[in-house]
Length: 268
Image (cartoon, rainbow, N blue to C red; front, side, top):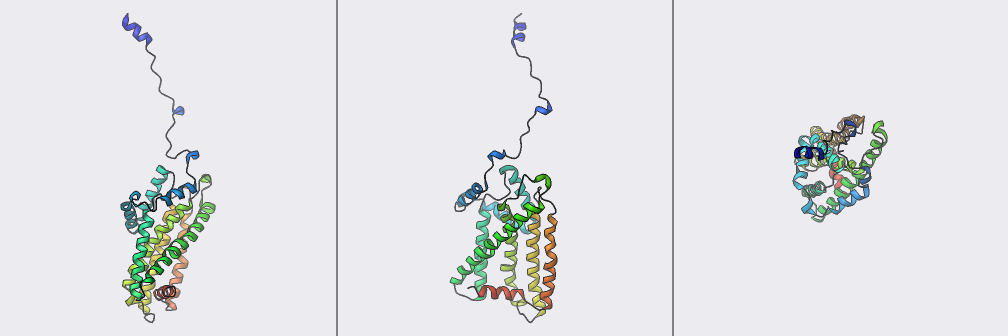
């Protein structure tokens, strides 16, 4: 009798919920809780001088893999979108390391041109704020506008490409270009820097062709990694006029390496 009373007082087991009532956790935060662009920018700039909060090891890994396998770098950007609801970097470690590389390249350039010590800082400021950031703002804004107005899929009109991500794509593509043109190229300048030597012009201009082609390719990878975009292969079409320009420089025997040296020397 006692066991029967216990059985009567215990509640009946609940039935499993129907499939329609299940609420699967979304990898994206609620749209109302998403950070605004200004909030993301403030968070990024606030950390730029807090070196202990930066992951320099991971930023170094990204720089290495931009040469080895850039697809893996953009795969990480997709993971960040799932976990932090943004494609753009929230850690300025990559930008800090890139600035150090710009300083090293400026020193190498000045040693090769035999100019004063103060010229190192002039060239450094020019390369950082004009070549990298200034040109990067223009290119990032252009791709941000084009990708949001012409590359977005009709089914993804409620999502957009972040300007910060467009600038990150520029930084990713700029780093290999910097290493090729500002560091590796200088070791061969005495060989191919002579304007009258056609073979030297060919070797030197080939460095430019490789560097700019790689810039275009990494840019293409950056936008093709976004699932909300389509027809991003159009970016690769820029290699056609690039190749035509390369051929024209050879016909004219025009050394781009000498032009680069002259360009920087006039600004020191």
